Structure formats: C-alpha cells, structure tokens
Amino acid sequence: MDRAQILLLGLPLFLLCSDLVNLFAPPPAKPPPPLPHRHHHLQHQPPNPPEALEFPPQKPSAVGGIGLGSTVFINFCSSCSYRGTAVTMKKMLETQFPGVDVVLANYPPPLPKRVLAKLVPVAQIGVFAVIMAGEHIFPMIGIAAPPPWYYSLRANRFGTIASTWLLGNMFQSFLQSSGAFEVYCNDELLFSKLKEGRFPGEIELKDLVGRRLANSRVTDGLGVMWS
Image 1: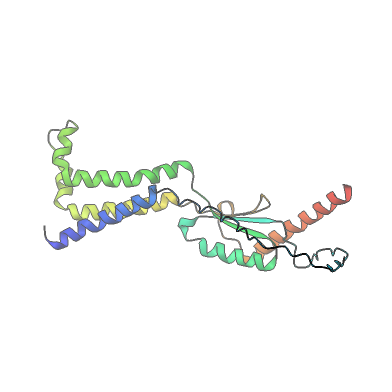
Image 2: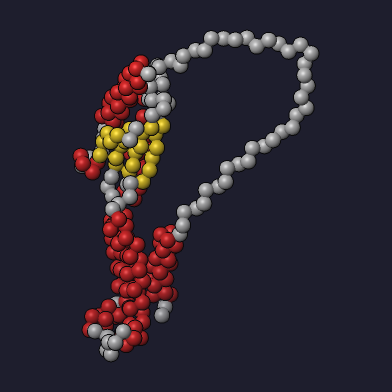
C-alpha cells in the first residue's frame, strides 16, 4: 500500500471520527456563576451627615422604549447557513425597538430525521468494515462466500470509501436541516418560513413586530386602567 492509498484511506476515516466525536459529544458544561466578592470596609460615621434631597419620581419616557419588557424569538435552521440572516434581523429589531430582547435559537428538525441523522455514521462505519474485512465478516453472519457485489466494491475500495463518506455526509446534512425561520413575539407567531416558503423582509418584519408591541402596550394600558 503506497502513500497515496494510505492518504485516501486515512483522510475519510479521520474526518469520520471527528464527525462522530462532534455528534455524540455532550454539550460543554456551563461555568458556575462567579461568587460575589465581599469587601470589608471600616465604617466611619461622619459627624454631620448631609441630608438626602428627595426628588419626585420621574416616569420613564415611552419614546425609544416601546420594546421594553418584550421578547422576540428567532428560531432558525443553524445547519442551513441562516445564522447571518438571523443576526441581521436581530440587530435591526434592537435598533428599531430599544429595550426589546431578541433571542436566537436553533429550530431542530423532526424527531425521525434526527434519529436517522444519528444512524448515518453507524452505517458509514459498517460499509467501511465490510469493504476492508468482508472475508471475515460474511462467514460470521452465516454467509459462506461473499456476494458478487462485494468483489466489485473491493476492487475499488478506496473510491467506495470516499464515495460512502461524501454521500453519507450529504445525507446527514439533509436530515439535520429543518429549513425553518420562525419569528415569535411574546409567544405569538409573527412569521413562519415553513408556511410562507420565503424569508421575511426587514420592513415587513419591523411592521409585524411594531404592530404586536403596540397591541401589547394597549392591552397593558387597559389592564392598568381597570385594575
């Protein structure tokens, strides 16, 4: 086996092992919150403490704070390269509605697709094992002689391994994608790419969020008036 064959065999196996580690590795643990530092200061009582001046409380201005206390969720498909669009929408909403909290989150695919995506690396390893050691595997499962297709794949085992790795990764990427870009404001769905089949425009999303926030302020004002 020359160096070129070793490289063609080792590179897909190395990338496959790295995919398996990233796929099944647990998420990193969140760091513990920092402990508050306690500073001990000597308390010196001034001889004549100044009197505190009392000012009447000022009401917060409504100008520039229409989004205060509201939360906008943008759930998008992270494996579809939608993060750039989500970040752009987040910056736009935070600029147009000061005080609003915009949260970005991944929208996962359905459960069957997630399960199949977990099984793709297992199938890839099975194909690699059969191609490299099929003469020993087939007798262990009760097949005395390997089937004819095995010899065809074994004759070009390096091309078969590379094709299995590339096609498996493409299929796994398809299974992990949801194609979603869902926008919620205070738990109310404002826009759904899964229903509309397109992305929202910046002006369109600004109008949708603005109307929702205005309705929330009217509802809160009525609740305060009737309480």
